[in-house]
Length: 71
Image (cartoon, rainbow, N blue to C red; front, side, top):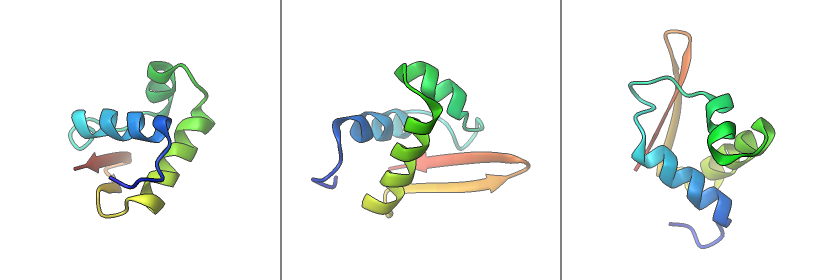
């Protein structure tokens, strides 16, 4: 994993990697609640992950929902 990830970004990445957001639509509200932070902080972390480790995370829109996959 990229050395320049923050501790929070690593935690969010691992949570995404271990979850099924391919089959279950992504919910920023649920993520924020799980991490006890604001939705903006989740948006910023996910956006940062797509820049820092673009080959390890995929975000796509399907059937009216956002899905996220990480490996």
